[in-house]
Length: 315
Image (cartoon, rainbow, N blue to C red):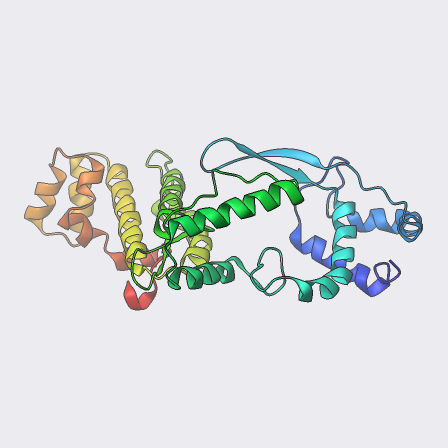
């Protein structure tokens, strides 16, 4: 505990807590107020830590909606407890991490969800396909967790099934001799739901503003799911997003005269512009028309800040 309370370790812990930010716990103390609180109370807290009598405060319970419905309860510790936890972690992690399994990736330094997906992919590529063997392993693991660790297996997330029918950290695998990483269908559904919210035609925002807000989400999503080995899915999503933008523009160009004028101003021929402006079809149908592809080409959408999901060499 003396090492935990060393000045350099505490300063590093304080820096990390500030970087992580986050909401306050039940005491309402914010990350910004932590330094001032420690200046006043640290001597007492240090004595309690060294004496082994420090008592963490209860966590603040928050319900987080789950993608598949229902809620997941999340406990938010106080900022002070997060600071002390970080100070402990910095001392204990170098001692214990080397003893952990090479197949363990959660909350470990230098390891990521992508590393875990790669390991899972390697297991899948080994080609083991015996259902009976899988059921034996499943039963053995379930017994161990239940009897030895007193943990209950979440059967909604655990099953003996073909890998291409299951999802793992947002990914799945293709049904091939050498399976490739693909984005799980559920992740694509959630992605489209979010994009629909950010590109609602009734928002009244300009295309530039919508592109700016949407691109923040797209960059983060691409940073994680761009790890897939099925770029055709990314290209398809790019096409779908661009079509939504063209649909938004068509909706904003209210009235046949305005639409005709906008199409002509953007390089569409007179006959095609008149034909498209007078169409009885809705915005989504028109968004896939030759006229909109000419008026709002991919280069224009990129110029107003719309981020592409697919790598440039496969777009």
